Image 1 (tube, rainbow, N blue to C red):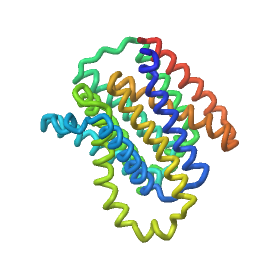
Image 2 (tube, rainbow, N blue to C red):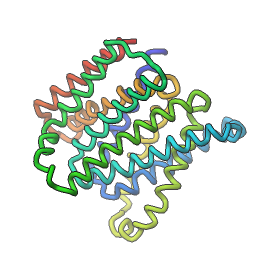
Image 3 (tube, rainbow, N blue to C red):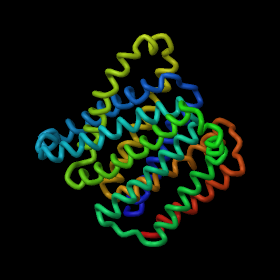
Image 4 (spheres, rainbow, N blue to C red):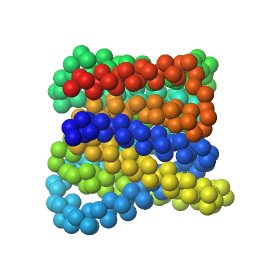
Length: 294
């Protein structure tokens, strides 16, 4: 049972990658609508669970400081998501993912080290480094493009927002990890979905005319299906923060490219480049080292 709890971030990464596979396979255009639908579905599911377990009195019993930590954590989560979406509009997805993931892992590691005073053994550090190297290797062909876009202000803005996205998500992992010492998984999920909806409803209202022109029932169906995978990923990720450290969860969750590339190869018939195959092997090696470090 303990090993399953330790591997929760990998299950989160798998479901996250599965959601991305659906968005990519069916060429979904309304990306701002996606987190809104996902949060709505998540909120309905979590509210049902909280009501069924009669957990509402507990949800409203926490201190104001704890509510403030949760609001800050998931406010940063929404900010990270919006920055991520804006980034992929300006530069390649591989660059965005690599920059955001790398800075997220570095930030949560530093926060855990110097604020939470965690100690990391050499095997854990080595495994983490190999995972980051694997992610960089997978996206090597995209990272080479950085040399060509350093004079392009739009591209530079994409790089900057990618880094801010990773910092926001790193902050989310750190604050949520602290809050989950005192709150349940479903309490945290309620805050996450509620705050996301409060932020995204005005944005989607502002873009209503554009959405109406481009949305159709087929796209809505696949947006809903993809959202269900993200809902699962979110609950598993929060569950991992509940039983593991923010560093552990963030590092193993960064293995999502392994599942994304594998799914693309199987279902989209995408060919794996040599650097991608090498990157997958590095990530797998790093994951094994991180797991055995415990």
